[in-house]
Image (cartoon, rainbow, N blue to C red; front, side):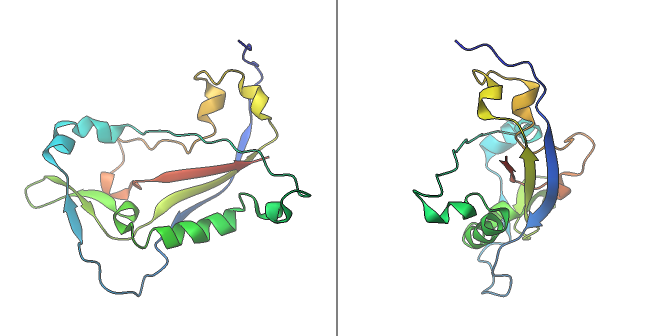
Length: 163
């Protein structure tokens, strides 16, 4: 097993933006509010946690893949995300409460958080990928669920980190 490189990885956030569904003027949404299931309500504390998935990709060789200069191009990714959010519009909404204080998703198209970051570090700086402060820098910062109104927290946050 490779030892973890103890160097501190620096990740610089270049841009934070909310990406909204591309078709804002399309047909009306079939659903404006989606009540959470009883199971979701039992585990309401889960809303105060963030699930993190990290994906690592090697940039293709320019000679092998001529379009590799667009590899993880943030503007292209944002446009694609906006298109994907059209049929998956609830993801662009926010949590809220109905008149009985039951949690629901407000399908208001407020958008998902898209963060563009950069680092000079290499993937081998992460060692064996055990949990570390370096690894956590590669995902968007988690909101403070205890002091922030839930209606202002995006349901999805993405971070693209390039070298």
